Length: 226
Image (cartoon, rainbow, N blue to C red; front, top):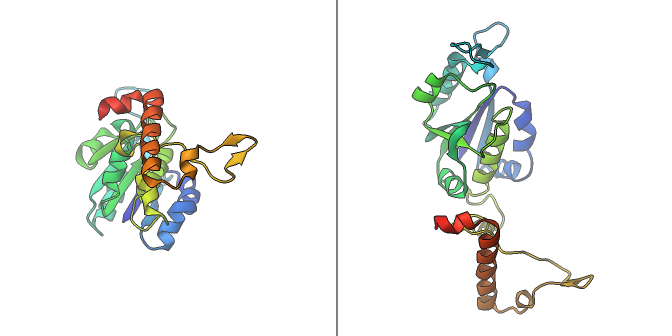
């Protein structure tokens, strides 16, 4: 899998993608993550990639030319399954979407900035618009990092225990059951006896019951969506 991230602030992403799970995925050659500085594609001598919006609106808008040239250069080298724009008014990013995107071969993530991008880019080049929540960030780098992390950890071979990803919260629209580790008794705080029983069927039953109870209490909306 290959993920190309287009940004005006590559330094915000370089440390993130070169550590932890994302670094491990790249070292295993299971995933390629490439960060592209949008300013490298502008024709402006001052390396500007934004301008004032028509109509007298407040703020600055990212221009067509550098975005178009960057995406065109990438598309000339390979086919992309999705060209994603991170924007507050996009579709909500969730676990099912992460699952879907993890099955693709090549994706581009364009990080929004300022008051957004020239809408013609959204009309003609973007294939999917995605939001990580109903709030506004200074830029799309945090959203791109969150999406890349959620997607890459699902790629087969990235996690040492592939079953771990399948039992995460939001798989099957349920929150994960509580988890415990040694010691079994810490200051009188005991691990539930069923987890120490070795009885696989009873443990599975407990796990499902806990998932349902926690989801009903904390995120009842997930049960309504099932």
